Image 1 (tube, rainbow, N blue to C red):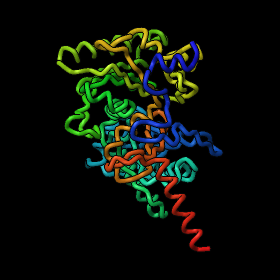
Image 2: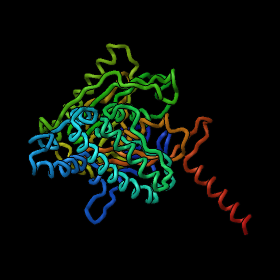
Image 3: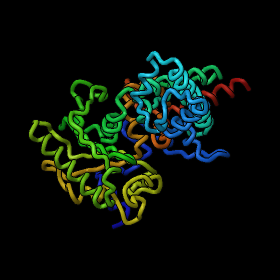
Image 4: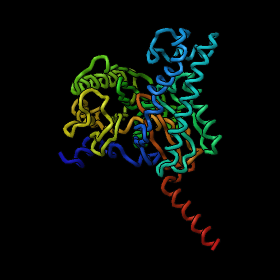
Length: 380
């Protein structure tokens, strides 16, 4: 089947990994910047924080005074570290604070490099998502990073993503769908695929309460830790199909008007036909094969939802998690998302529509250029 035919078959509305979405232009995503030490994102990942924590424990280990004992740094839970921050063990708290400071310096360095790229020029705000954000230590690291950048005269706001990271990737899928879908339906199915987990959810749009989707919520969700089961690629698709069918049944039972639409967040560079170019190495089996297409595979298993043909749109997971912030980013023009997890996901957006209904995005750039030319002419 030709690429154009495959796109029409699986979406019927747009192409996967699109640069232009209903509310935003996706200026860039999944940028891989390198320095002399390798990929930049590795300096601000979940694993990087654990390495930093371990470095601060080493001097204390030598004297037998490590407050964490023999427990490996990568096995200490975020909850334990959060409790230490407010606990009575001053030395343990000092170790965690030291690790937060060092990590914030790394995150500031990485953010600085992003902001200096052409794709991230004029970024006004960055939201930080991913599992690391779901902790007090993560929030402190984000706040400290913002202070570091502002002390260097970067005019940038840095803030934790609003929704819980587990739900942001599901709610963001709403912003892949064209708005007409919401007029006759009150919910969609969403999938968030990660290197360890696959999460499926029934997302209520609450469109009648807020047409900007700011009131949307995850009504039901199901999690599968595929890393524990080590399935084949085909086995993973089969399990995912089963999870989605279960949610369809529950939606019907609970009286939801489910749209014939599935939004998917997936790691990697997503091609227009739904194949994955690169970046899916942590998923079960070879998802980057030219012979594999997840949207097409799911269409085979779920050809219709209700009385309508199923439409599926897939985009990069960092992009989709960032899209959950669209309703709350209307006071800026250009903004980005960084997701701290196994790696560092990233995406930069330009808003297309403001509250007055005008299309923004590229038109705003054109207006800026027009103003500049007019000024230059006046100066001459």
